[in-house]
Every structure is written in structure tokens, then in C-alpha cells.
Length: 296
Image (cartoon, rainbow, N blue to C red; front, side, top):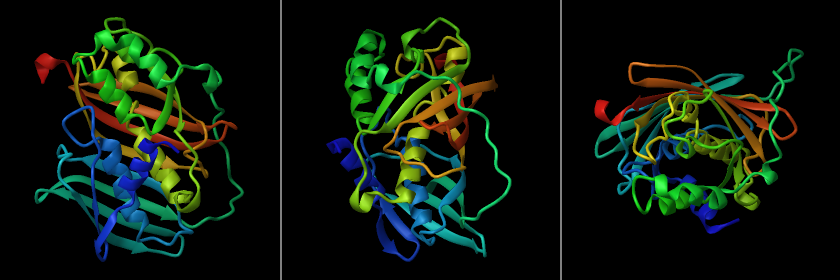
């Protein structure tokens, strides 16, 4: 486990300050606001800490309300909406400077055996170990980033995750429209063991990563390189996930992403996350703000 992953796990170890109230910190980001995946993951941790461990999360629905301040703590207040025989529901509001910046509703489900089960097949993808690491890939495009220190900021922001693009990312081919579909393999950069090897944390880590690349497919459709090269003003607006089967964040997961539509300054990204053995473990949908700089 590298230091970056240890730091990320430390961020997810929220401080309980009162019953159903938790405090979290932030880590450095490549943009002057809190990374959305961090807020979503911390909010899910807060909700999960009020639910029995034998009820893992099966879905979350969230809205990003205001940009988060990376220099200030975030307070997460959990509302215990319902505790049923099979399902538990929690609502979480993240607050900074007296104002809500994020709202999440999560549902947890007790395990049950059911006769009905199916899934779509895993799409074809190369072995992740044949693909370049971030440290190998990103320097190739350093001259295209809008700021001199952008390469280092990107590498530091993603250091906790071993993320590998199947095809060239949007910032590699700005100005060239491509099919609105992208794939990445990812896993944490190190194994989780001891207290960190907890099902809830694995799900929260996947939630964290799910916000990193989901809107890439929107950018590809329009030949935009993204905020890293300065030809898009963007932000996550909402985020929804469904967890279908048990998963491990420290084992390879294929994130298959596409964009069915974009209009009016908003783009929709959808994703399916598969384990390396072909199991569909999660589905993701997000709408994001995607404007050309002159529209921002």
C-alpha cells in the first residue's frame, strides 16, 4: 500500500463528532474545489457507519450543490430515514461554511438468495497489465496541459489508484471527435488488509474512482480535451450508482463508459463496472456541466 492510498483511507476514516454527525477532511485536487468523488465516498461512509455491517449499500443518488472548499472541514449529517426488515435508507447532507454542498440518499439491503438473476456480458478489453500506467501515459501529453504544473497535480491526485486507459484519453486527441465511449481499468494501488479490508470501504473506494473519468465519453464525442487542456468548463451535477454484486476495490475492475446525449450545457455519462472474472458489479449514471470556455 503506497502513501497516497494510506492518505485516501485516512480521509475516509471520518471523525464522529456527535450521534449521526461526522467530520471529514479534504486532499489536494487538480481544480480549486473538492473532488466530487471524495465527497460522495465520504458521504457514503457516513451513511454506512449508521447501518449494520451485514447490510451493504445497493444504491446511491446524489446531487453536487456547491463547490467544496478543500481548505475547510466538511460536516456530514446523517438522517435515519427508514430501518426496514430488508432495506435501510439514509440521507446525508454535507455542509461547509454553514451551507450544504452535497446531498446523498443511500439504500442498504440485507443479503437474500433469489431465483432471478441475469446480467449483460462483459465487453472485450485488453489485459490491464499490457496498458501503460498513469506515470507512463500522462507525461506524453504534458505539453498539452493548460498549466505547467498540471502533470504533477494529475499524478498526485490519482496516485492512490492504478488507473489505465484502454484507448487514448480525451486530452490526447483534442480537436478530433471520436465515438462517445471509453474504457479504463482501475484498482487501488495496493491491497487492503486488516481493518481497511471492509466491504463498505471497498464500495466507497469504487464510488471515489467512479467520478474520475465518467464524463470522458461526452468530451470524446465533441473532440474536447477537457479541463486539463482548457477547452471545457465542467463539473459534476449529480451522480447515481447501483451495486449489483460483491466487489473488491483492490482487484482489477473494468469501467466501460459511454455518453448517450449532451445538450444545453449538460452531458450524460453512463458506466458499467465489471470484475475481471466478468461479473457486472456496479452501474453508474452521471450528468455533468460541459460548456465551452466562452459559454462559462
